[in-house]
Image 1 (cartoon, helix red, strand yellow):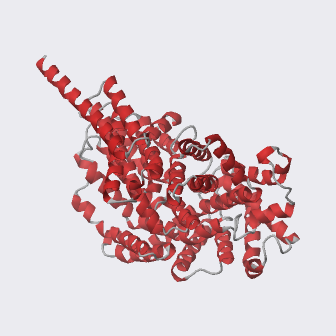
Image 2: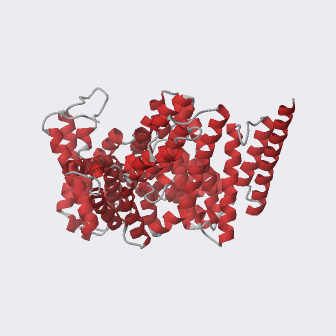
Image 3: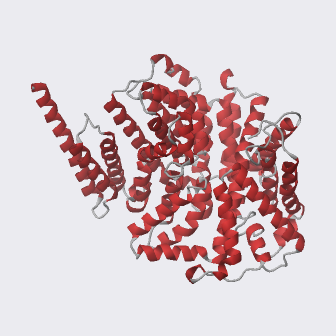
Length: 627
């Protein structure tokens, strides 16, 4: 991103701060008509991308070029037009009323500038996916078999991709979610960081885990999970917390790739950590019409299991390697932690309002206002006007790439829906699965991981859910369980090879090979795979069923993950040999995925394996002492 010189820098930061402030105001006092709100949102955040993000590496880093200004004007024009004629646009009947020449011109400008903004600020892979979707609408009628579509006119393609507020495209419901609920939550997260909540999380992680074996790695896990509730971005999470934790991990003996893998696995999990859970969870609430509070409750045990598994893995690794704790001089006192403890109260406000089923945007607005007020209780956290301004600017910088990413995903979803590709691709997967739910789940998980190689988490989840969830529901899977399954694998895609954005960011901080780092990130994030399938087969992890079912299903996951992590770390109560590692690994995997047996039987098997390995280890230790 550019570091602009001269008056343009303050003007642009003022633009972003004002846009964020207006979004926050609307969140508390009500939004304008949907089409007008979406136009304002896109006008506020798409054009600045061309001034802030250079086109190529050789572009100036301190000023935009003349071409960038032309892109800026072209990006603003279609959204200004929609804003001016919002009433007429809202009143027109989609695909029935004529799509005029001026509409066609504005649609072309909106789509082309969106593609370029996506290439610059998000991912070239997403831009190419949007292009592929448009090409499929144009040429799909030439393809054979299930890929064949009807003939679409140019105006139909443009209308579907741009101006169908009730179905998809740039101005579709997905953009509406970002412009309302998600935007206000991003602002809340930015205010959390500005108030010093990040310092609270960092100190809490260090105080809670720093003095134990492998302390820096445990600090990374705890801190990254807490930071994830604010940032919603795995890559920014890695950069923020990894700059501190990765060097500490390397200092006590973790290899660079392992340190990077731990940080990447912990950072991607921030998107599944309640109460915020990143942007995709709000999209899930909108798509499913399930209250956000219910989604948070259903995902809570899964998030705890995910971080429990990483903590167990880093503990076993540290014990096996004989690593030490953090230096005492670097561990903050509990008094230092408690000095910022009042900053938890706004999150309490947020959770309470969400559980009381207030709208997400109003809950986030109230929590943001509470943050400003509560931060004044101590001088060290007090938010001055300058701090508030900077928080609004940072929120704008976060929203700009997200706005274009979601709008691009809207085009893809619109194309998949209009062409019937959702049904066709779903039918292909269904045929390959042959009526087998386990095989269908494996195919869908693979599809989501492949999509995630070139897409951020939220667009990846949106597209995969459009394809896969109907197939799962048709086979009797609960709707929320199906969406959480897709969501978990969309999150994991940021850490799994061959292309893993979060792992690659961690590798750059750790100065380690990116691919090896992503392999380690995958193994430390193994709980994401087991919990994803547990949503389907073990409903107790979603707090469904009676108390006994919840306890059994959760216990199966806990001990399965302990066995798996101990197997690949080579340590349980003592170092493990090949036989012990194999026994634990097989038992753990069977407990996690052996759904042919009830939970009680799987739990008994993994407990028996762990007991046997422990007994053998004790016997070997006695023989060693005797010798």
